[in-house]
Image (cartoon, rainbow, N blue to C red; front, side, top):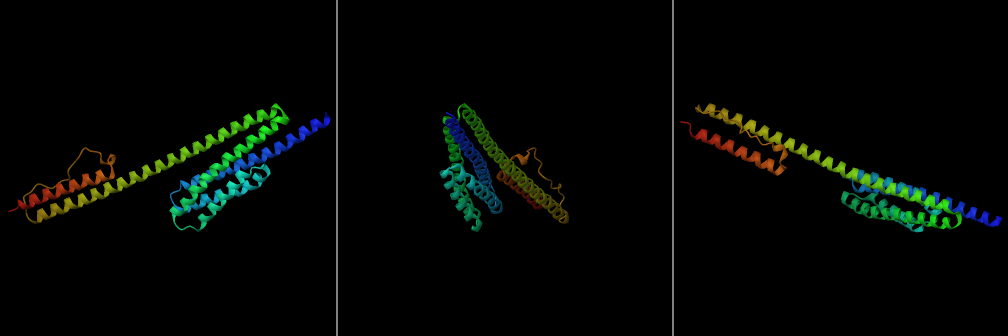
Length: 247
Protein backbone atom coordinates (compact mmCIF):
# COMPACT_ATOMS: atom_id res chain seq x y z
CA UNK A 1 0.00 0.00 0.00
CA UNK A 2 2.87 2.36 0.85
CA UNK A 3 4.45 1.72 -2.56
CA UNK A 4 1.10 2.47 -4.20
CA UNK A 5 0.91 5.90 -2.59
CA UNK A 6 4.53 6.60 -3.57
CA UNK A 7 3.71 5.68 -7.15
CA UNK A 8 0.68 7.98 -7.12
CA UNK A 9 2.77 10.80 -5.70
CA UNK A 10 5.47 10.27 -8.36
CA UNK A 11 2.92 10.26 -11.18
CA UNK A 12 1.25 13.38 -9.81
CA UNK A 13 4.63 15.14 -9.58
CA UNK A 14 5.48 14.23 -13.19
CA UNK A 15 2.09 15.46 -14.32
CA UNK A 16 2.53 18.68 -12.36
CA UNK A 17 5.94 19.35 -13.96
CA UNK A 18 4.52 18.63 -17.41
CA UNK A 19 1.63 20.96 -16.71
CA UNK A 20 4.00 23.73 -15.60
CA UNK A 21 5.90 23.36 -18.85
CA UNK A 22 2.63 23.42 -20.78
CA UNK A 23 1.63 26.61 -18.96
CA UNK A 24 4.93 28.22 -19.93
CA UNK A 25 4.54 27.03 -23.51
CA UNK A 26 0.99 28.37 -23.56
CA UNK A 27 2.21 31.79 -22.43
CA UNK A 28 4.90 31.90 -25.14
CA UNK A 29 2.46 30.77 -27.85
CA UNK A 30 -0.14 33.33 -26.80
CA UNK A 31 2.56 36.00 -27.02
CA UNK A 32 3.58 34.72 -30.46
CA UNK A 33 -0.06 34.90 -31.59
CA UNK A 34 -0.45 38.42 -30.19
CA UNK A 35 2.68 39.67 -31.97
CA UNK A 36 1.79 38.09 -35.32
CA UNK A 37 -1.66 39.70 -35.10
CA UNK A 38 0.05 43.05 -34.52
CA UNK A 39 2.18 42.34 -37.59
CA UNK A 40 -0.93 41.56 -39.67
CA UNK A 41 -2.61 44.76 -38.48
CA UNK A 42 0.47 46.90 -39.27
CA UNK A 43 0.21 49.49 -42.02
CA UNK A 44 3.83 49.48 -43.18
CA UNK A 45 6.55 46.91 -43.82
CA UNK A 46 8.81 48.20 -41.03
CA UNK A 47 6.25 47.56 -38.30
CA UNK A 48 5.26 44.29 -39.93
CA UNK A 49 8.84 42.99 -39.78
CA UNK A 50 9.28 44.22 -36.19
CA UNK A 51 6.25 42.36 -34.84
CA UNK A 52 6.98 39.32 -37.00
CA UNK A 53 10.45 39.12 -35.43
CA UNK A 54 8.98 39.37 -31.93
CA UNK A 55 6.60 36.55 -32.79
CA UNK A 56 9.55 34.40 -33.93
CA UNK A 57 11.30 35.04 -30.61
CA UNK A 58 8.22 33.90 -28.66
CA UNK A 59 7.88 30.80 -30.86
CA UNK A 60 11.53 29.90 -30.20
CA UNK A 61 11.08 30.33 -26.44
CA UNK A 62 8.09 27.98 -26.57
CA UNK A 63 9.97 25.09 -28.23
CA UNK A 64 11.89 23.85 -25.17
CA UNK A 65 8.81 23.89 -22.96
CA UNK A 66 6.74 22.26 -25.70
CA UNK A 67 9.21 19.37 -25.82
CA UNK A 68 9.01 18.94 -22.02
CA UNK A 69 5.25 19.31 -22.16
CA UNK A 70 5.06 16.60 -24.79
CA UNK A 71 2.76 18.52 -27.10
CA UNK A 72 4.21 17.45 -30.48
CA UNK A 73 1.42 18.96 -32.59
CA UNK A 74 1.90 22.39 -31.04
CA UNK A 75 5.67 22.01 -31.46
CA UNK A 76 5.30 21.20 -35.17
CA UNK A 77 3.04 24.24 -35.60
CA UNK A 78 5.57 26.46 -33.80
CA UNK A 79 8.28 25.29 -36.20
CA UNK A 80 6.02 26.07 -39.17
CA UNK A 81 5.35 29.52 -37.75
CA UNK A 82 9.07 30.20 -37.35
CA UNK A 83 9.72 28.99 -40.90
CA UNK A 84 7.07 31.27 -42.41
CA UNK A 85 7.97 34.36 -40.38
CA UNK A 86 11.67 33.93 -41.13
CA UNK A 87 10.86 34.50 -44.82
CA UNK A 88 9.57 38.00 -44.02
CA UNK A 89 13.07 39.28 -43.29
CA UNK A 90 13.91 39.08 -46.99
CA UNK A 91 10.66 40.31 -48.56
CA UNK A 92 10.69 43.72 -50.23
CA UNK A 93 7.01 44.60 -50.41
CA UNK A 94 4.38 45.01 -47.71
CA UNK A 95 1.96 42.74 -49.60
CA UNK A 96 4.48 39.85 -49.74
CA UNK A 97 5.18 40.21 -46.03
CA UNK A 98 1.49 40.27 -45.16
CA UNK A 99 0.99 37.05 -47.18
CA UNK A 100 3.38 35.16 -44.89
CA UNK A 101 2.08 36.88 -41.77
CA UNK A 102 -1.51 35.80 -42.52
CA UNK A 103 -0.45 32.14 -42.81
CA UNK A 104 1.67 32.41 -39.66
CA UNK A 105 -1.23 34.03 -37.80
CA UNK A 106 -3.52 31.10 -38.61
CA UNK A 107 -0.85 28.58 -37.60
CA UNK A 108 -0.17 30.48 -34.39
CA UNK A 109 -3.85 30.35 -33.48
CA UNK A 110 -3.86 26.59 -34.09
CA UNK A 111 -0.80 26.17 -31.84
CA UNK A 112 -2.62 27.89 -28.95
CA UNK A 113 -5.58 25.57 -29.43
CA UNK A 114 -3.30 22.52 -29.47
CA UNK A 115 -1.43 23.49 -26.31
CA UNK A 116 -4.80 23.96 -24.61
CA UNK A 117 -5.73 20.42 -25.64
CA UNK A 118 -2.46 19.06 -24.25
CA UNK A 119 -3.02 20.85 -20.95
CA UNK A 120 -6.49 19.34 -20.68
CA UNK A 121 -5.15 15.84 -21.42
CA UNK A 122 -2.49 16.18 -18.73
CA UNK A 123 -5.07 17.29 -16.23
CA UNK A 124 -7.29 14.36 -17.17
CA UNK A 125 -4.44 11.86 -16.73
CA UNK A 126 -3.29 13.30 -13.42
CA UNK A 127 -6.87 13.28 -12.13
CA UNK A 128 -6.92 9.50 -12.33
CA UNK A 129 -3.92 9.27 -9.99
CA UNK A 130 -3.83 12.41 -7.89
CA UNK A 131 -7.52 12.75 -6.96
CA UNK A 132 -9.85 15.68 -6.76
CA UNK A 133 -7.11 18.27 -6.32
CA UNK A 134 -6.27 17.96 -10.01
CA UNK A 135 -9.90 18.57 -10.92
CA UNK A 136 -9.71 21.85 -9.04
CA UNK A 137 -6.51 22.71 -10.91
CA UNK A 138 -8.25 21.89 -14.20
CA UNK A 139 -11.03 24.30 -13.37
CA UNK A 140 -8.47 26.97 -12.55
CA UNK A 141 -6.67 26.29 -15.81
CA UNK A 142 -9.91 26.54 -17.75
CA UNK A 143 -10.61 29.84 -16.01
CA UNK A 144 -7.11 31.02 -16.91
CA UNK A 145 -7.60 29.99 -20.54
CA UNK A 146 -10.91 31.83 -20.62
CA UNK A 147 -9.21 34.95 -19.27
CA UNK A 148 -6.45 34.65 -21.87
CA UNK A 149 -9.02 34.30 -24.64
CA UNK A 150 -10.92 37.30 -23.30
CA UNK A 151 -7.65 39.26 -23.16
CA UNK A 152 -6.95 38.39 -26.80
CA UNK A 153 -10.44 39.47 -27.83
CA UNK A 154 -10.08 42.71 -25.88
CA UNK A 155 -6.72 43.44 -27.47
CA UNK A 156 -8.15 42.74 -30.93
CA UNK A 157 -11.05 45.10 -30.17
CA UNK A 158 -8.63 47.79 -28.94
CA UNK A 159 -6.52 47.47 -32.08
CA UNK A 160 -9.59 47.81 -34.31
CA UNK A 161 -10.70 50.84 -32.31
CA UNK A 162 -7.29 52.49 -32.63
CA UNK A 163 -7.18 51.84 -36.37
CA UNK A 164 -10.67 53.30 -36.81
CA UNK A 165 -9.69 56.33 -34.72
CA UNK A 166 -6.53 56.81 -36.76
CA UNK A 167 -8.44 56.62 -40.05
CA UNK A 168 -10.99 59.09 -38.74
CA UNK A 169 -8.24 61.55 -37.76
CA UNK A 170 -6.55 61.18 -41.16
CA UNK A 171 -9.84 61.82 -42.96
CA UNK A 172 -10.56 64.88 -40.80
CA UNK A 173 -7.10 66.30 -41.52
CA UNK A 174 -7.51 65.66 -45.25
CA UNK A 175 -10.85 67.51 -45.25
CA UNK A 176 -9.39 70.45 -43.30
CA UNK A 177 -6.47 70.78 -45.72
CA UNK A 178 -8.81 70.52 -48.73
CA UNK A 179 -11.18 73.18 -47.37
CA UNK A 180 -8.25 75.47 -46.55
CA UNK A 181 -6.87 75.11 -50.09
CA UNK A 182 -10.24 75.89 -51.70
CA UNK A 183 -10.86 78.90 -49.45
CA UNK A 184 -7.40 80.21 -50.27
CA UNK A 185 -8.07 79.83 -54.00
CA UNK A 186 -11.46 81.56 -53.69
CA UNK A 187 -9.95 84.49 -51.76
CA UNK A 188 -7.21 84.85 -54.38
CA UNK A 189 -9.71 84.71 -57.27
CA UNK A 190 -12.02 87.31 -55.69
CA UNK A 191 -9.11 89.71 -55.21
CA UNK A 192 -8.03 89.23 -58.83
CA UNK A 193 -11.58 89.72 -60.13
CA UNK A 194 -12.09 92.94 -58.20
CA UNK A 195 -8.67 94.31 -59.19
CA UNK A 196 -9.38 93.68 -62.89
CA UNK A 197 -12.82 95.31 -62.68
CA UNK A 198 -11.27 98.30 -60.96
CA UNK A 199 -8.61 98.66 -63.65
CA UNK A 200 -11.32 98.48 -66.32
CA UNK A 201 -13.08 101.30 -64.50
CA UNK A 202 -16.23 99.23 -64.23
CA UNK A 203 -18.86 100.60 -61.96
CA UNK A 204 -19.54 97.31 -60.32
CA UNK A 205 -20.49 95.84 -57.04
CA UNK A 206 -17.56 94.12 -55.37
CA UNK A 207 -17.38 90.41 -56.06
CA UNK A 208 -17.81 88.64 -52.74
CA UNK A 209 -17.59 85.07 -51.54
CA UNK A 210 -20.79 83.05 -51.72
CA UNK A 211 -21.75 82.46 -48.11
CA UNK A 212 -23.29 79.17 -47.08
CA UNK A 213 -24.79 77.90 -43.84
CA UNK A 214 -23.70 74.38 -44.70
CA UNK A 215 -20.94 72.85 -42.57
CA UNK A 216 -18.92 71.32 -45.38
CA UNK A 217 -16.57 69.55 -42.97
CA UNK A 218 -19.34 67.02 -42.31
CA UNK A 219 -19.54 66.11 -45.99
CA UNK A 220 -17.51 63.50 -47.87
CA UNK A 221 -14.31 64.50 -49.68
CA UNK A 222 -16.07 64.21 -53.03
CA UNK A 223 -18.99 66.38 -51.86
CA UNK A 224 -16.55 69.00 -50.57
CA UNK A 225 -14.86 69.14 -53.98
CA UNK A 226 -18.22 69.53 -55.73
CA UNK A 227 -19.35 72.23 -53.30
CA UNK A 228 -16.28 74.41 -53.80
CA UNK A 229 -16.11 73.74 -57.54
CA UNK A 230 -19.65 75.05 -57.88
CA UNK A 231 -18.75 78.11 -55.80
CA UNK A 232 -15.76 78.82 -58.03
CA UNK A 233 -17.95 78.51 -61.12
CA UNK A 234 -20.54 80.93 -59.69
CA UNK A 235 -17.87 83.47 -58.75
CA UNK A 236 -16.36 83.23 -62.24
CA UNK A 237 -19.81 83.66 -63.78
CA UNK A 238 -20.49 86.74 -61.63
CA UNK A 239 -17.13 88.19 -62.60
CA UNK A 240 -17.73 87.69 -66.34
CA UNK A 241 -21.19 89.19 -66.02
CA UNK A 242 -19.76 92.32 -64.37
CA UNK A 243 -16.97 92.50 -66.92
CA UNK A 244 -19.38 92.26 -69.84
CA UNK A 245 -21.48 95.05 -68.39
CA UNK A 246 -18.54 97.48 -68.51
CA UNK A 247 -18.86 100.32 -71.07
